[in-house]
Amino acid sequence: MTTNDQAAEASAPSVADTLTLKFDRFSPAERKVARRILETPQLVAKLNVSQLAEVCQVSDATVVRMSQHAGYSGYYQMRIFLMRDLDRGRRTERPVIATNPVSYSFERDLLYLKTLCSPEIMASIEQAAEMVMEAEAVYVVAVGNTTPIADDLEFRLNTLGVRAFTAEKIESQMRYVMNARAEDVIIIISKSGSSVGVMQVVEVATERGARVLAITGSETSPLSKAASLVVSTGNSEKVFDQLAPRVETHLGELFVTNALVFQVDIRLRSQGDSPTGEELELSLSSFKM
Image (cartoon, rainbow, N blue to C red):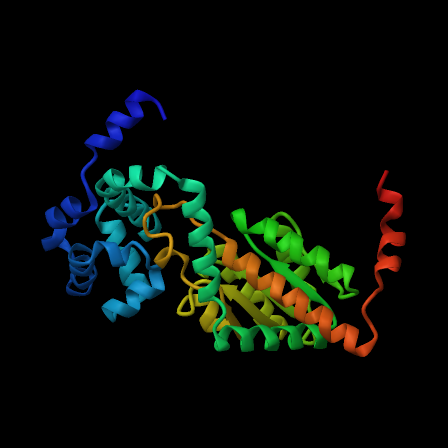
């Protein structure tokens, strides 16, 4: 960021100032959203559109309209500015973390993973493994920086003999899903569960009659509401609340997919269907030096 950019950011009005200035112009429903943001900005900064709408008892569209009437392109952009405002107030706390950031990170990682070891999440992973085992084909969908986790899951499922497909671009993933059948499972990995691309895939999957398995950090998101089964990846923001906004971790998604692969492997071995280590190494030998 250039000096001019930093100066422009520093001089930009806060979300609180913007909402206060335009409050009287909002509709009654929009004022409920604006008032919630003004009263509990720390809470709102952790909520997606659907979660905030539920808290305010309004529609998702009302949240988006209020954000646009406030001068933002949508709620997502307003939320980014809100997190920036909160970040300014937390910068004085960072030197404490900076004294031993590696140790802090490891401790927080372990704490976060422990929150995922609940009976409910473990049971949902077992159900997810059963869905994968029953599927004729598995399509793994993700967008943005969650895509590498989808690549990893697809690779390891195929290694176990499960027919799995994914692609780097959401457009290619969509083409795969357009060929899905009722016997197939669509695994969608999305921390927010509210990505436009993800929801378009859900719509197509539903039309094709395929079951949707959601691996997400938001159990109230549009994705969770539309999925056949939801596996929660927890709320990492509760653990990483002292880090800079938008420095989110996908440790939960990786943890869940790893547990899912392990469950599938155990089930295949119990049936005598899992490829042996020698078979796998032989099949991959031509790609290694």
